[in-house]
Image (cartoon, rainbow over all chains, first blue to last red; front, side):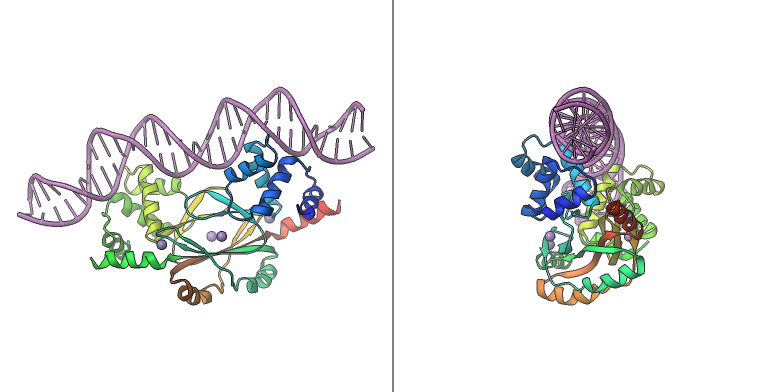
Length: 145
Length: 145
DNA sequence: CGATTATTGAGATGGATTCTCATTTGTTCG
DNA sequence: CGAACAAATGAGAATCCATCTCAATAATCG
Ligand SMILES: [Mn+2]
Ligand SMILES: [Mn+2]
Ligand SMILES: [Zn+2]
Ligand SMILES: [Zn+2]
């Protein structure tokens, strides 16, 4: 379990507690797209007393520290991912299908944006919306009927 | 009020009703970042009987049709924007500040993604996360104390 | 170790979204 | 132009998720 994240927490003046360690651990190992409920369940596997409110509080804290961030795909509420590097989706607005892809040109923009707005950028999300191959056929069928 | 959107609704087999027209009208004219409550209020200015559930149903429908899409900024619930072209944010993970910016290289990727995945892309969202100028000073101050 | 605080967990509360169902309305077609 | 039909609506109930409250606990520091 990443010692540097723990140090980051401590250096920011926060206490190192079992629920926080559990959530951190889960984000590290499970990785992507877990919702607060799932995170709670996994956290309780590590530290059974973990309460729901604490998971929300921890996620908020880790978000503020730039360690995780929420991501919203479809209508199923927020989900959390590590806030580093890029995350890229192709989303079908009709059926909700989501495809992850990798190659991305957004990094090329970071330097300039940082200079222009004085930001320090650590991650990005790029999502394209449209119709997946399957839904295109449905839609054109409907039109030609 | 855009006749082509009305035609799009009708062609997809949906009825043209006052609440739907009202929501469409609002999205057209008010544009960006309205939440369901605000949309309800504006819709009722046009068609007073409009019910809350209908606004939610209409937003869902318009989302499926690729006319609008939800966008989540900060923790303040979903907000709706037109689903066309690009939308670009710089988000501070500490204080939540959001800056809109314009120039973007994502369009250049569309063609290739469409071919690779068989998608038909109509819009995109590009968000960079990090620390705004102000929060950078706070954080380094905390570290040096 | 004891003092000082931040943190926690349980449950209550609040707010937003969805559901239900009887009623109304748009559309189609004769 | 009326039916006739199915789709859509609105009011309120029900549900679900997130936040708040507060007394108890535990991390950190000297
Ligand atoms: Mn993903
Ligand atoms: Mn914006
Ligand atoms: Zn699809
Ligand atoms: Zn900031």
